[in-house]
Length: 65
Image 1 (tube, rainbow, N blue to C red):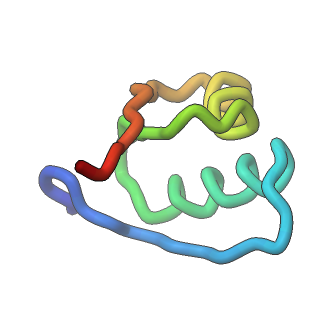
Image 2 (image 1 turned 180 degrees about the horizontal axis):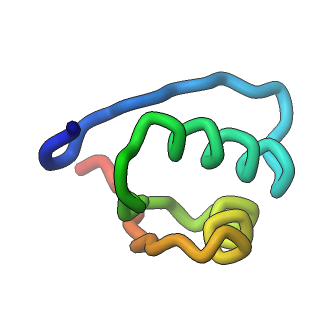
């Protein structure tokens, strides 16, 4: 069981789109007992994939000082 903000899976893809995002999210869900809350940047393909799976997410953009 994961506690708090932990990185549970990381993949590198040559493309960024709805289908690869949805595939990645489904893989993440295999590592979780419950539905996790995702933190995403402004990438529209991530938001669309999470919404299509009925998952909670929050938008956060990081800026370096």
